[in-house]
Structure formats: structure tokens, C-alpha cells
Image (cartoon, rainbow, N blue to C red; front, side, top):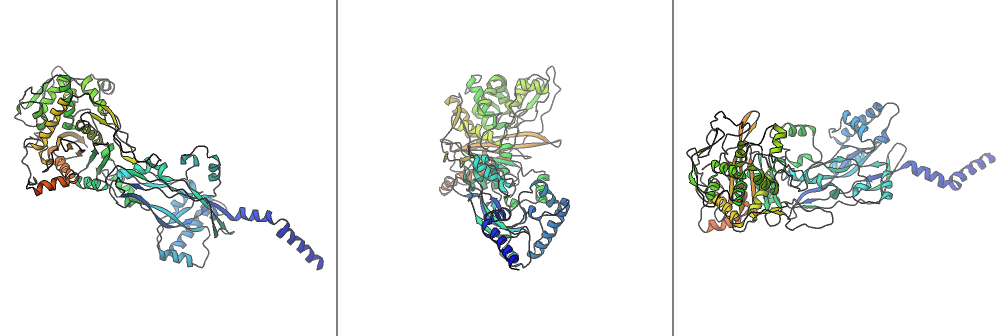
Length: 637
């Protein structure tokens, strides 16, 4: 017995003293798990510091699949996890969000990271789990950052949303030469998922918003129960991103669009800042917190109104008569028409045997450039287009103004289509014809543009020829600070006199009773504007686009605004009414001062002549004008 005790004592000496460090290291290697923690995501703010996207803590139940692995096929593990989820569901009295298919999907795609089965637990549910006497192997309570959007449905197409993403590697955090940190990141046993940008600014500025993940150690026993948490490298929070948007004006623009499908863009002429970029219909970012259900996602995808579609920056439409100022400036600058030269509008004009009717079926009679802009006379601008020729003059002006090119604002934007003779020959196998030029002169036919591009076009007129670089991100969180200066891409070769003629015509369109934009007029505010109506086809049905673009104050423009409404009536009606509401929000003090002085708000509905039916088409004789839009732009007198 003495020899036996001596032997045991010797073994105990070897284990506890001589080789204690070896066994201790082996135990630590077995029982410690290094867990990567994602960094708190940076906020998204408007220009005034209003929070558009933020974080809030969310208590979750996380299951570590590797700790729950069963012998044999993976189906055994799925059964085991499924039973644990049922058990937890009973404990906290909360229905499951993850079914068997979700478990399988996690095992196949994201097995190294925890499975978050229950999110957003309240205090009572947390207490039930903490006080539960039985074992819950492979289970942990984890505080996860949840992305929240305090304003809900304001600017969802710009802000975007996030989803769970795989952990970023160190080289994606924006630092070269950090191989040691990258190796360290790869040694994590568990890597908790990051929030990754999926759309909008959340995606465009994802690297700045994301920050850098940290980590800690957890000690577990043989059945995977967590005993201890040891702090490690703390996460580095992401940077805040400041937008040029004014959230108050953004909401006003979205409310002004109402039930219309369309968009509105407001740009600050002093620096190119986009202070509002609204799209309707829109969706609520609150539906994406903590995650979007498959049912809601399917509803959004199947909605024929396409609420996920950013019409303001990515929608492309025929611009209609809002394009006419470009034709006017081209004709004046090239000298094909004089300032006071008269043209006799008889209600239609014939091009190659086809008739293009004016919005005024009886014609406008004798009129000059200023009057033609105010009343939006189709025959007049078709004549100016024929005199100038589409290429190279009108085409070159359009190219310099940014038509056919995607504006660079940080989120996806559409380029629209700026056609050319070579494009038509390659696309349609036909040469450019006079009817194509007639179409372009009215802003119809092949040419398309986004509301953002139309606002930039108007800004070039308002700023006397400066082609502005638009800006949506004021501070990208990249360490460069606030960007708050005017960037001019180029300057148009328009003379000041020709600009004044066109701007005065746009002033008359808003302020004279015969102007097509008269519905947009506000007391105490001098503005210039242009309406437009273009026809398009949807599902074989002919519909109309209502446009209006404007700038104010007239003498020293501060803002430009472009509005489009799909499936609408004339631009001088729906679009002008929307413009009026947004302009009131922009210049409320000026308007209210005028009201106090006794100038009444023009609340009455104007009597307007609706556009005539589609123009009569005669068979073309001699010249093939396939594709020519015979309908007038629809502007009202």
C-alpha cells in the first residue's frame, strides 16, 4: 500500500508540478474559444446632424453549431439543433424564426459563425433563460448591434439597408501592410457576422461605416457550456457619414409626391449639394429591423409600383418639353434665330408628310422665343431643331450638360440615352432623319434622362452656364472632413444675353397667366420654370409623364427643382402642383411675408385647356419616319 501511494504521489507530482504547464496549455487550447466581435457601425446623418441610421443593442440567442455537432450524417446535427430550438422556444415563450431549412442553410453556408435563432429578447425572456436550471449546450446570450432607422420611411432609396455578412478580412478594413492582424483574424474560432451594406449609402460607404472587428475569449466545458469571458482586442467603431440631404425637406418632397409614382430632386446652386432626392412610392426601413421577413420582401418585389426602385437617380424617362430650353439656347447661340424673330404657329407643322400638332390646336399665331418658351409651342421648337440640326450642335450641348452620362454621387445613377446617328444606325439599321430631330426638339423619341440629370440641366441655366458636379455625401467618414465647395465640371459657351432670353421665357411660364407653369406660382417668390408632358407605353397602354423643372429666386437662384410623375396628366397640372408644395417648404418665410403684406395665395384651380388627342398621322411619302412620336408634348396654354 505504501508503494502504491508512493506511485500515485509520483504521478500526481508529474501532473501537478513537473508537467503542469503542458497539461494547462492543452486544457486552455481545448476549453478556450477566440470569438471575433464586429465593430459598431457608424451613423448616417443629414446635413443638420439629424440621425438617419443608427445602432441599438439587441439581445439574441446564439447557437454554436460546431459545439452541437453529432456523430454521423449532418441530419443528426440538424435534428439536435432543431430540438434545442424547440426547447428554448418553450422557455422564453417565443415562436421560432429559424426552421429546419434555415438550420440546413446555416450549416451549408455559414457554419463557422453562430446561428442567431431568437433576436430582440426582452428582460423577462432574458431572466427565464438565466434562471433555467437545466443545461443548454452550445447556447449563448449575445448582445448584437441592430441597425435602426429613426425616420422610418424617409429617404429609404438613398440610405439603403444592411444585412448579415461574413466577417471582413483585415485588408478590407482599409490598411495595407497589416499582415499580422490579418493572420490574427484568421485564427478566430468563431466569427460573429458583420452588418454589411446592401443598398444605398449603407453599401456605397460600407468600408467607412463598418469599422474594424475586435475579439474576446470564452471558456467552455466539455459539453460546450460557457463559463468565462475574457476581454480581448476591442472593436474599432465605424465612422459617421454625413449626407447633403435636409431630412425635413426630403420628407416634404416625399409627402408632396403623395400617391403619384415619380420623383423630385432639389439641388443647391451654390455648391451642387443634393438637399432632397425623393422617390414615390417608397418603403419603410423599419421593416428591415432586425431583419426583413421573406413575406415582406416578396411583397415589395411583386408590387407593380416598384417601391424598391430609385426613380430619382435611376429612373430614365423622355424629358418632354423641359428639354426645350436646351434647344432654345442652341438655336440662339448658333444664330439660326434672332431674339425678336417671329414665327407663325398655325397649330401644327409637317415633317416629311406627317403632322405634329401644337398643344393649342388653333395655333399660337405670331410668337418669338420668349413667348414660345412660356407657352411651350411645339411647332416653334421643331422649327428651331430643324434649323440647328441635331448633330453636332444640340448633341454636343447635351453631352456637355451630362446627358448620356451617369452622375457620380456615390450611389448608382442612370445615364439615360443620348442618341446619335451612329447609335441609330447600329441599333435600328437606319439613318438619322428629320423626324428624329423633330422628336428630340420636343424632348421625345429616343432621348431619355433621369430627374437628377434634368435638375442638373436646370442648374446650368440658373447658374449662367456652369455645369455642376452634384454631391450627395458631404463627409464620407474617410478622414478628409466636410466637403463644402462648388465644383464646376465645365462651362457652357452660352452668352449672357441668350441665357437671359431663355430665363425670362421660363419666368413668364411661371408668372404670366398664359404660362404653362402658372400653377406653381407662389406669392413673394419669383421663379423661372418649364413644364413638359411626354408619352410612353406601359403594357401596351399609352400613358403620360408629367414634368416640371424650376429655379428660384429668379434674380439670384439658390435652388433648382425637377419633378416627374408617371401615368399622369399634363406637366402644368400635376407636376406644377407638386413643385408648388416643395417650393413652399423651401421658401416658406418669403411666402408668408408676402401673405402678411396682403398678397393672396393662388389656391384656386386654373382653367386649362387639356392637350388634344394624339395627332393625326398621314402616310409618309418619300421619307421613312419610323419611330417618330406624333403626339404633342401635352403642355397647356
